[in-house]
Image (tube, rainbow, N blue to C red; front, side, top):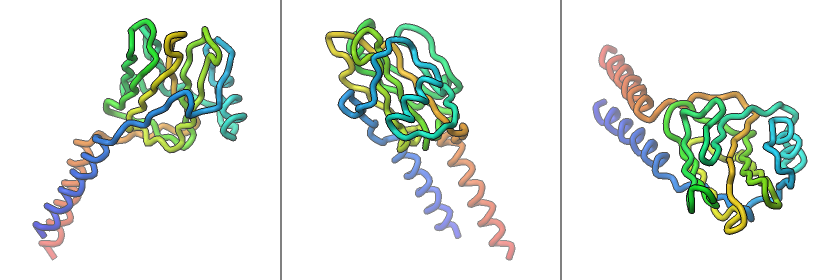
Length: 188
């Protein structure tokens, strides 16, 4: 019985370690053909119309899950769960890294990333994040180098928000369940 408990704890630990050490998903302008020349900040209706045309998205209205403005503020219901670091220069970033920090994570079969400049054509790039698990980092590379900059990134979604427990909580919960099962077996 003790071996089962130890093996289960090791499996949970390996699972959590592999999730945390996963390579980021790299996205470049060449990874999408879905763009817009409209320099204004897209709202949920604008994003929905574009992703319907590009990716065949459904009619469910989109909500702003996370947005980070270069040199400004964050917005959306998941601001405490993610962090974005813009790079190259602080005023002219061509790259960014969006990382999951902790807490609730975005669950995506119907999520879309919007990368905006606004001063150049195209002004906006749209990406389908349907395969993203919400905890992998998103690395953006090569947006408007030497002729523009990322002004903001935003993640929009049509699905219900799903809370994903932190790794430590998962480990404690799994240990507790295994302990309960082991104790119950001893009684029988």
